Length: 410
Length: 229
Image 1: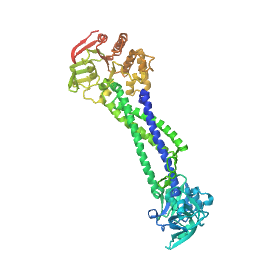
Image 2: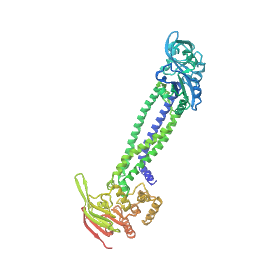
Image 3: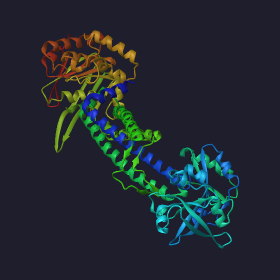
Image 4: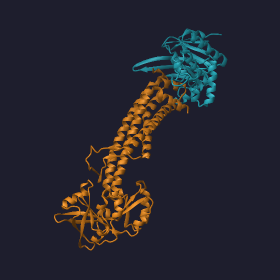
């Protein structure tokens, strides 16, 4: 404890300089933590939106379906939905049938991707449907109601309530048509979705293709994204062991979103590194100044009988204490900034287009942070290590001096 | 065996192309309990001689023995340890650590020796009483007079009970009265505890108090006079 006390006293020898250095380090920690947590929150929001409209946190497919999107690769879900629904952490299981089809009105026709859904389950989860009034929603799984994208509606030159025909290939290879009526209209903001989306009841879709009781996808929605690994393991145990039906994570099912997030975060990490590098340079400068000012004192300490390594350790101890103090202050500030960003967020509505798309998901202009305490702790530890590293050169320099040389300084 | 022996010791400093012969072929011995001074004008080699004895510096040629140990080829680590156990230092400008209190400064060598805190403090407080600075334990050096600071430095030098105390111009920054007080103090310690004191000084007050005066001139031994008490 003696050397700790000495190090503490030495740190406050030049109060102003220490406060400035502490402020610089603490502010960098605050910035990096808050920005990371903001990204963490934004990404989590995007993933949540993406999985609820897309594949779910975990998706179940026939082997090779993801790669080929071959509509013949469907499977009977049997009791799988029930079994998976009972797993702890599962919020909902959404059966889906994806059918490439031709939509025709009296005036126009378009190629579409017809999606057969369970309307009751889907309404609770799918963000495209959540905002639809009840009267605009598909009434039952075998009804002729359809919810279509706003652009598609315009392209087919029809209005809500009007009929249109969809034609798709049956399982036996023949073409089969169904008459549908526009019940609701979805405007997601994404061009691809709005110009191709048609949702109908699952049973009606199955009739179109002759795939009664079959699905292409079971989208598993979790109550908490952090449970993915454990739930994935449990789902895999319930699937047939011949590996013809597989459970995949959302990252594999929606690679565009996953890659967009990875790329964005990689560029952020680069910025974080630059911030920390700048801080490290400042700390090296401060510690070097502090050491050079005390060369005479170090000469005396060596003369009194301190080993060079003891002297170096004293300087490193000062750096550790400085780093720990800055990490504590920085983390408090980072927590305060994160709290603000969680509760209030950053509203970019005036700065970004209304419907900006990112990785296939609509970007919410109100950015909110999410707490990531593990990462916050990690960045604090990195900074302490960086401070230690910054002290290495000054410590080595101090230890290299001889008592006589040191005492010649003024 | 003498406590300290310098055998044909020379020290040459090189500054660029220039050679400065600080000490040339000096041979001396010191016995335990001596109260000796290196005297001479500035540049005569007094501080160099003290630095060599205190293993703060290496001789260019010759050998230095302290307590029978040849300090010439030892590593920095070994020399540091040797100084810690055997040699105390008193400097002209006190050289107390400004962020430490008087007691903490005096305890510093004991701290390096890993002596427990309570034991260190007891020892230092006893020394402070002997040196007439009891009550000043918690003051910082900046709050002490020159004489008080030098007494703290003496306490620091004595705390580890070294075999020899080397004092480089210890009275140079003190007024006459304080200087005389301190010299008397060091004489008393030398008499009562048998601590060996070796000074470097050009101060007549110090020279007249010493029992042995070694005159240096331009790095050479000019005279070595023992004054019978």
